[in-house]
Amino acid sequence: MYQLDLPWLLLTLPVPLLVWWLLPPHRETSASIRLPFFTEVAEAAGVRPTEGSVIARRTWPQILCEGAAWCLVVVALARPQFVEPPIEKVEPQRDILLALDLSQSMDTKDFPGADGKPLARVDAVKQVVADFVGRRPGDRIGLVAFGDAPYPLAPFTMDHALVETMIADAVPGMAGPRTSLGDALGLAVKMFEKTTVPEKVLIVLTDGNDTASRMPPLKAAEIAKSKGVVVHAVGIGDPLATGEDKLDTATLQKIAEKTGGRYFFGGDQAQLASIYQVLDQITPGDQKKLSWRPRVELFQWPLLAAVLLLAGFHASAGAVGFVRRRAIA
Image 1 (cartoon, rainbow, N blue to C red):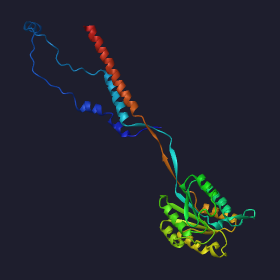
Image 2 (image 1 turned 90 degrees about the vertical axis):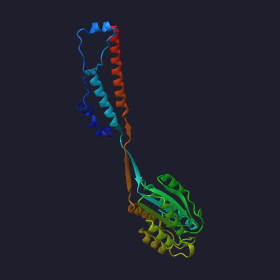
Image 3 (image 1 turned 180 degrees about the vertical axis):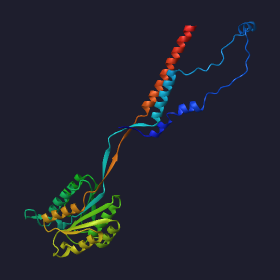
């Protein structure tokens, strides 16, 4: 649609009329002598008389052209614009970081699959997590892998195909054979510091206990809570095992409780899938729509029309005057 950006400037349209009414032309009278035989006296004196000052009155065509030009100039000053259809941009209001345990124990083939046959833990996890990523088209998602140390695999991004590719290419042991859960939480907090979204969610999945962290997991959870990061913990594996293979459910529960998240235990692939469905439900899509309407400036067209109108009028008036003078001569 078309609109005027400064429509109040149209109030200046009657200004020329106000000036004409309030400021009339300056008039001055002077004494003069009337000679009955002026021509004879001038000839006798050898003086050739000339015309006095003549103030030409405006003609109706001149008044109309100048009035129209003034109107066009005022319209140009009011900045006519063509407003194009709105362009909408969807801005995510939540960042989700996935932290996956890729220690060597994730290669253990003891995880019941959907058909009941045992799968490697990492294969079951990759299928379920990739499906969760596909369900979150409106969120920025990042990916962290941790073993002996945590490593960021993908920054927060809307390019979910990239995240899914990184998940598919994940290999147990690529981050080291041990588990550094506390350091993974610390890296997650550091990554969230660079985001400005109101909601920050970390989903951490592990199958063992912390054996390699320099920062205790519960201390890292306290820092996450102070930074507004909600941690949901998902545990798989055997809570009754010993050593590094034992799933530390107590620590995972405390981490979730401290940060306002929830703890889940996935006993098989179907249960793990239902966990991520629950996570999808408790973190509903929340987006902010930004709308912007591009504007095309059109002030140059009425301004150009005013210039051409005045130029055309004065050119035609000059031509008529020239023709008249030639005819008199």
